[in-house]
Length: 401
Image (cartoon, rainbow, N blue to C red; front, side, top):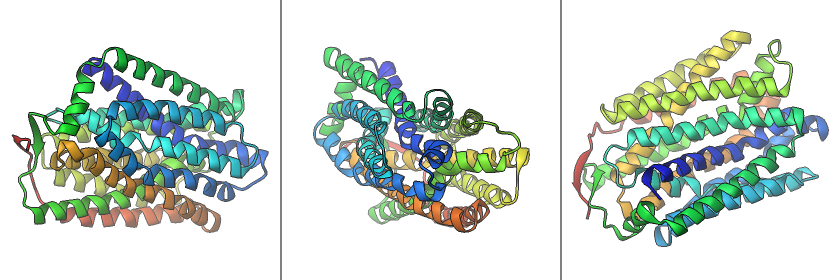
């Protein structure tokens, strides 16, 4: 398989990964709370097991990819996540939904520690490829609200789990078959990653003390960024339903608004990816964090078009942060154990995502979303302060060991 075709499969995988993890967010907000006569706050916790699995299973997935095959693990990802999503459609109780989402989370956990290393493997400048891949992931976030809302209005909420699942299974079969028949470059790259035989790689000239400090900052900002990302992406359909009540008339309309917010915000990753390849990563990161502080602080009390504009602005900053830590990890991690390093990062990310769900439910039930945005502004300020301690380092090309 050619590198270009393989990159396309990886981008589709990132789209589907975030799509599957957020189907329930729209289903809960726009369908199940009516059908099952449960409040939004009561339904949200049933998504928590899926996000716990999304985080904790990243490490074994990364270990298997490094020891066995990244291409093989990607094939399992496509087929497994699709099958579990389709099965979730047969749920008749909240417990069944929680069980189905847990299974989805197990397979969805494969993508980030496996797909992201495949995206950057053998590349010198990694910012833009990671950013392009990130845009697909964010379009998956937006499309989950859009397509789920459309299917709720036309085919029912169960179709929102079934049809994407069947499509993912088909893509997985095609991906595995093409790699089996035409292993070509990606298979060789994956093998080189496990053998440590890549000719050159981008690394940072740092000592171990500095390396430890960088990893600590990455993990801190990853945890805090995970809270911001989950709180905004999961809650946005409900936020828009409340804040744009005079502008929305159906689940599909809410989905359209959410999709355009996510789609426009995804462009921030391309800008950030371009900038971190050419300028100080630290100062780019500080700018993104500062934007989050400002726009989360502006959101409380807004309704109508002002709320939509500010929501788009804080999603621009939220999505803009995503490629920064990935670029930094890619620069300092050796190829043969890169999947495990990414897995550790994503365990922190998605554990933060899982713990955010009860937080969203609790805050919304007691105080509403204004309090949530005030809290997110404080979290963004903590990210800004952590980034201040990041060394100002530039990448250096050195031979792989």
